Image 1: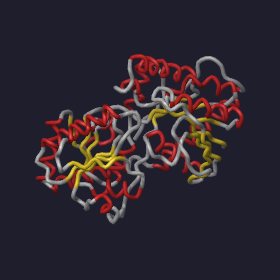
Image 2: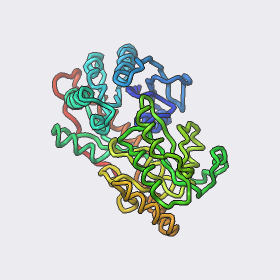
Image 3: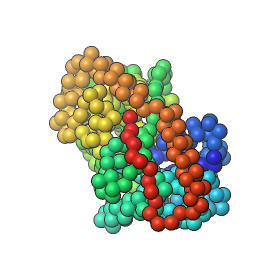
Length: 381
């Protein structure tokens, strides 16, 4: 099959969950013999991990970047006519009719309740709510990456979806030789990896850590475009505490893997967005995880995780973790066992099966009109 993956920044994955999904699923589909084309707006090689890359432009504005880039990708898709498109981000739903006009079936990977993010004003939130409804109406299938997202679409729109979580890479024998680049040593720090957005609670984590008596450093990896105000809030929360290191983004995947694998704990503040690849990478490293208490994080961690809702909660958890290394090690082992439920090869297989179903159904139908019939609901691991 000729499969087009549309609607993200593209690969290599350097930004968020959608990009990580495209890279991990796309490379596996390519290994299985499919012609995989990834559309994106970042510079890079013509081919990456067996996937062909097509770079398109974008209007560099928070409210317009995604839709403008995807619109340019759709122009090329209409010309190249792939067998099937996987469209990422419900915000791109207004472009679905243009894809169907080219007689291409489309599965839309809906986002994790984007309208709840504080970065969007009233107009942005109304747009995202409308886009969700359009994705339900015009997609040939919906993909959710978490049971909570699947349930939301069922409750809100009466719509079924395929629930396909991301895969969790198992990080064995990562080593620690690159930690010295950041002045760190194995077992000497707690770790945060997140985009700097209010919903990721980085400022709350920094506040909770600062209140604690923790002896080990807090290493905060991350940044975000259009996020100067929130970045200032994180820096204000850190103050002059010498135990806190704000290191910015880390693009070297080997170094990032070593950061996950050698941390005492991983602190995860994400409150929206479904199943999060950073959380999966942490549990795949066997790192004890403290997560913000929402359904998405409990779904992944279950009894393996520690959960917090306030800075005071996190303070108590950090103090307890540093006082009881044995319990931290046991939680890490539980996290590793949870990671085995999120198999990347199985995830890619399910994407492949869905694409095959869409191509076969489109061929039988000959054309499509009106409201699409979504596939029967299924559940993530």
